[in-house]
Image (cartoon, rainbow, N blue to C red; front, side, top):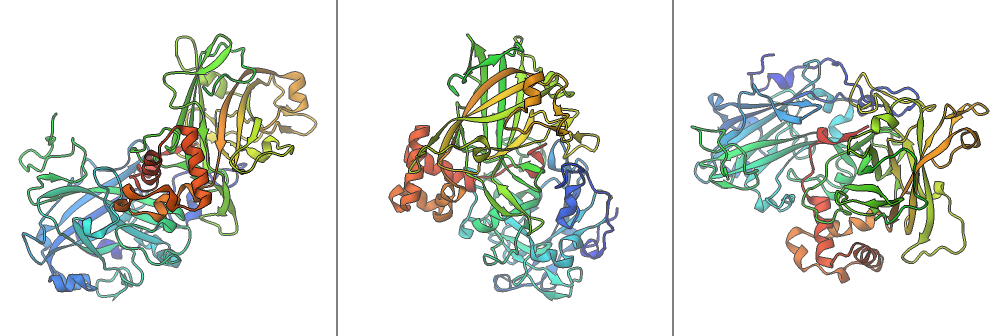
Length: 580
């Protein structure tokens, strides 16, 4: 595919390409959930950078690409592709692997035109899919940067670059009406580099808003607002390596990033207990159990997605992925040295408008869960349980307690009040029904529970989540109802014919809502964080956070830093997350 002309790729209309299969909202008949987005997911992203001249005064205003005196011979192109294994990564045959640029300090009036082009799985140009039919009102590229602490740089004065949206109407005409200020999208823009001799990763994210992007006020190029982050997903997220001048100062790249030395660009710069389980049971001779809890979001009522969270969070309970590892010892299930904790700290779920259908409400947050089993030789035997139709997990709330200022007063709260769970097992058991065309989600007659997702609709509660595994002995479906047992209790038919073969429990704490957890990052700037006191919060937030501090054994300094990093720390690649 020829892509050498500056604006021709933007003018080429794409035809609908072959869609990659993901799950739909209908668990009975999975279909491609990407259709809900009203556009395909790109397979390839092409970033074109062309040097030019523009006065500082013009750049400070509202410049258009036609105002830039371009030097076509300086064109640099980086091509990314999205893959199941690597996510978005620079292609091996990309014309360039990094952009080498001049700063406006050493070369006054030097700017660069930056163009973004997307291609569908069929190879068709598809920028129009993010613009036509009102899609331009919910899409926006952001050009952001994380510092060495992996925190988002939110002060534009601290950025080593400036950017101006230069989108037009019509979008594919160079001389169209400039709309960058009133409707910033970022397929076309002008960038300059304001610090000399540095190298850094420039994050370019294509935001897909679940609400109009101007609902909370138009966001600047360097970061969406907290409200918009909460009400959006990312269609594309890449890192462009930028080398300014001699690139001697590393602002945020890994130590093994390519060297600025053009003679050897690949040389690195520096070679250098859930306690004991209630009524523990183990008739399968399982030695070890490992559970992963991923805090994620839903694309539909059955389509779960987890994006890897920030890595600079110290408390394992405040990470977006929590892990528990259990071992069977002397008739009890106890945590092992591999465990990242002995409890799960969860957030109350609330119903929010669906990203793709405003008339549908979805719970948020949700927790994807994978359960894996190992024998005495520490060999994984999950396949013996998760394959076929012989077993089913149940998830039951026990030992329920009121916490904070909401004690139980004799009322009876059952499992359904406290735990919601959706089975998302697949055949084959170890493949993704969301990502692999040849993998199917089990139907309603064959729930297993090796993988699925939870949400917890009631806060100010703690309880033991008792997990029972039953050998169904060909009795999974009750012939009287034609249905399998619900997640919270075995049916009478199953109790009569089947057998519980394994039982363990995990303490669950649901002290508060996401609104309280996110209060710190919503209200505080990074430079003010060291002096921010808990007394500056409202009474509700103080009470909840003090409870969490005591529960986890954290100081105020530790919890406020972790909560700030949790919201503003650098997230992983969208494609590298967890799907069912």
